[in-house]
Amino acid sequence: MAVGTGAEATNARAWTAYGAHHLQCGTPAPEVDRLAWGFWPTGPGAEVLGDLGGQRVLELGSGIGRYAAFLVQQHGARIDAVDASPTQHQRALAWYGDLPGLALHLGDAVDYLRQADPYDLVYSIHGFGYIDPGRLLPALAAATKPGGRLVFSVLHTNLEGRGPSPALAVRSERLHLTGHDTPLDVQMWVPSPGLWEDLLVDHGFVVEQVETLNAPEDDIPVSCRLFHARRRARIASRSRTARPPEPDGLGGHRR
Ligand SMILES: C[S@@+](CC[C@H](N)C(=O)[O-])C[C@H]1O[C@@H](n2cnc3c(N)ncnc32)[C@H](O)[C@@H]1O
Image: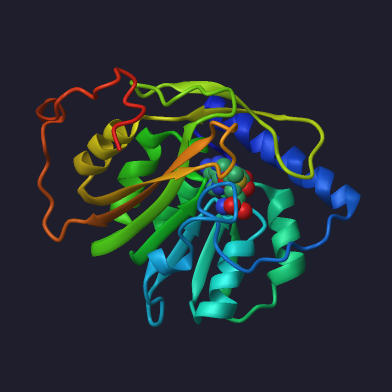
């Protein structure tokens, strides 16, 4: 798979090594009884996606396909799910490859979006932080129907308490993942919520809500944001400078 930048290539290698490790260990399929938009099983679940019946639905960065499979099995959805890691895709195929209503695709999300017919709903659970927004957003806009929805969760504050970036820049992050002894070194885009909103508006989306998802443990600073956006029926661009500056300078706690 060809991905655009060096940072994205680093991420592709990291997620491929992660999947290879779990293939080697024979890690069993996870028990999934809800969607987890943060990194923990509390907070909003599948209800934020609304009624999925009859909708054309796409998940980006679907990993082992657990959440797409859950929505197909428990919510009657039909879903296309795309992930760039061949090893994660292999795990997804082994567990959910025969599930009617779920189509698992191996490939870069942006390449996929560029050739796809538009969707009613596109969602991602911690997939967008690994993809250059400059590539992702134009392709997302083109592949979301006018009036269609975009729902995604992203990192806001990491385990060390570092908040989001005020400018659109990629940065190093070290992920400590459940069931994985060695941390995963990745390159991530962690824009502030206000910057995400600017980017979305510039690409023809209206942001309807941004939910704060904090780690349930008081001593863990990790925080995520869950965006609910809708593609405008008619596209009108807004000047980025129209938005007042964010109060904490980092844009970290605007919402
Ligand atoms: C944090 S994992 C989330 C997986 C899944 N959403 C879940 O919560 O179980 C991020 C996933 O994004 C995928 N990914 C990263 N860059 C991608 C890209 N350019 N296109 C498609 N998938 C990508 C990785 O391979 C990885 O499986």
